[in-house]
Length: 211
Image (cartoon, rainbow, N blue to C red; front, side, top):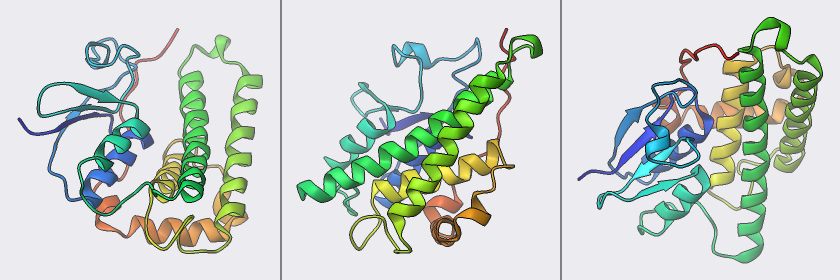
């Protein structure tokens, strides 16, 4: 049985794992799902009903993008995406958490906008947009014009950050991060030119409107 990855096409979290698998040259099969829709299969594989979900060769599942990448690191395939050195490891995980937080805020904006017009909370949307803006500024400050966030090669910090930037462009393109953070623009362009990113660009999927 080949590794299978349950994904949604626009998901930055699924893309993070898709990129990692390609960077490590690990063969796998993609299974499409929309976890917000009534016909989703995600809850049968992950009690939280969230994707991505990795279905391993023995049939057991691993869920949460960070945990899946931690699992991929145990397979012995280069490049090493999570440093072993403690300080670098914490730095990479911190940046990953920040980038994932930006993506989480964008997800919440998308879902809120799918509610009935009279139920949409502008205060909630404003709060999430503030998280996106603050998170992108922090990523820019942390990168400081370097090629990689930590060390001298790609890590999960770089993958998560690049996935978050592309997701912002896909879901809320009016966010002006490109004019505010030119260092992130150069970083994003460089990462998006890699084959692993070019093959996994986010594509919108329809979400059933929420009540």
